[in-house]
Length: 363
Image 1 (cartoon, rainbow, N blue to C red):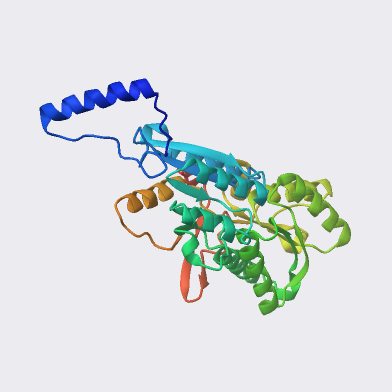
Image 2: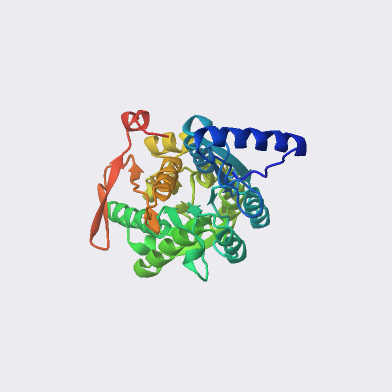
């Protein structure tokens, strides 16, 4: 971090005299390098300062993501992490980024709450010569040079994985597309995860004739998921699939399903409601998937800290990281009917969830 140098005049004269004497004796001219504004050219301590604008703490995935960043950018690893929680408000995130710029951090990491509206503040970071690394959700900018790189998940592919699993599982149960009556509890509207996962469901519903009854945002929270599902069960009496765009919404939906006297599970013919989810971070959700209460979870890996740290090390060496870096992810299910899904001529395995798999997971 750049720090302004404050010098007492008398101390300065004494220091200058000492330097002159030393220089005469050694033949060397040692001095502190400063820029035209009087700031030191780098961190005095040699610590790399990271400004991280996290969008909030709305889910277990987000908490795991934040912890991954804190671990990677610890003081033991040679970093100082300035962590700012945006509380789901873009205005707070923009304020945080401007504060990072004013403080002269070495790198800015941004997990954006929505895709649009970042051009101005990213331009300010570029003018300050501070690299910006985007994580998790994507940003839409007029100029992609406004950010250094992005790392995260292919949310549209995640949606397609869930839907292809549903298509194959329904076929294994002798169900046609018209037999599926689906509601979607969406994530935060305008976020990359919501856009991609919703797009996958809408595309498959149109292609295979699924009855997509309603799409309503649950803001990635358990409380909102429960509220939304409760109302959907009042609105429709034939729901047999609920597509939840994260684990926390799925947990809320399950609470609403059970409160209504219905059963979450995989036997649609006998009145069960099939629950699909994303993330695979919440321990309760994973255990529900193990027992079949949640039929399938599409993994969304939250451990971005080490990946971002690798990018920063690449930049320090003068290298150029990939502009876009997608993380590798799998699907989890305890139902053995679907062993893999095929999308665009590529096979994606489905991990049969067992206690051993849970015990050896990284999160």
